[in-house]
Length: 464
Image (cartoon, rainbow, N blue to C red; front, top):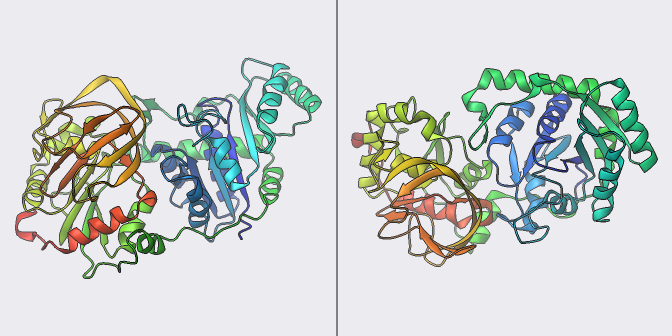
């Protein structure tokens, strides 16, 4: 049993509570608390801002990708040694995976965590009606403990008085009232917020402004007391070593600490914190490098992971780094395991918007007007560097690019839901796909990659 104090920050609709959640994390951190930050859903970008606010890794809680049973253990793992856990919701409070009821919704996660919910309401275009809105959210599901409201984008003192009076009639505590403040906003582009890694100094200023706004407008003592009112959370913390052992029927960590290079930097910011932890637990040494700056793969590289991000924003710079592109080609040609997701898939292609990429895959990528977004169910069609044939996973697609052809002679995945199709490329040791998968749901993926890496000699002579 755990007594970690915790809050879920939710909203009636997407975009209403983002800066408030991050501001709370930063304000509590500045007050001397160790804050564990969590994000409902698959999003990679918000956790980057959470990490900036708290100084700890931002983590995801996705009941679709990882399963409802993993939500509390993952929160307990991430909040080890923390004084407070703050969970930012996704979309509207009750919005979940399309067509699957409450699955993966903020409401479901709040119930699984037995956590009180604070609803952040955009009050800019309403006064007394706010009480009806909040009443509806509070009464929709009696198992969700909607314990208070933070009013956002309040126009004036008089506006705040009207809002507070209405909510007092409804019996819902107002825990904060925030004025409109353009300086706390974070710029966006085609896939959401611009990641922290691309605007470090400006992002830090935004987070500081958000913390200042929250300190001025919210009752932090009342919010902390509410977090402490959360009951004990049953179960134990997720443990990467135990997860790997259980998923592989007790297989030991691979010997020799094979080096798994992981792409980072501004172009490749999408990665779940648990992936590196699982690779380490499986026996690998994780070495992060930046394809925008580094001309060599890390010393001793035996496997490569290139996750998601925004290579389309840096296509010219990635293309100009010819020494690294040659190193990646040499590693892939040797048969070493190379796992690429979304942005990594584009980087391995021949071209991205006409600019030369690595050319490992016989495919070309380009930007598109169409957004591809949603949860997916898939099965591995053949043995590969990441999974054995028949392995079933749940994943997420999120991109505005097109790869032609989208599937190779040996596809990476057979999609089974919501539509049947094949996708991705498997060739030699390469596994490349648009599909983002959370390895905490299938820790054997990390062990398989580490084991494949251990079988390969480092290619120092051809990796730089």
